[in-house]
Length: 122
Image (cartoon, rainbow, N blue to C red):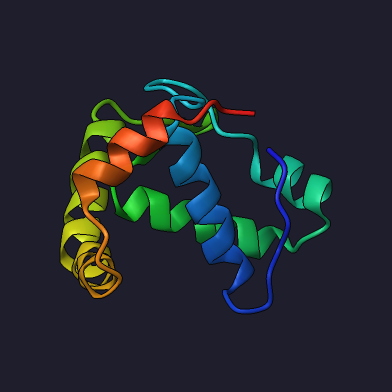
């Protein structure tokens, strides 16, 4: 897990978001163990309390579970729950301004999609 920290968001939140991205991308699957708090803190030179706070948010969201004496594990259904909430967030918060911008610029979504599928990827 490689992370570049930014100053606009608390580190625990960035760490939580990185784990969420790894679950969404399928890098972390149900039943997979998260790296230990101590390991993450050491690898990224951050306070273990920061890592614990990020992991606790994931537990609170039922995306990971604590197994006493064993660590933290991705829960069954974590990816499906994340997909649902991320899609809702996109449709509610990100899509409306994007749709307005497309209209303002006179861009047609179907045409853009057709053009982007024709462009060779580098």
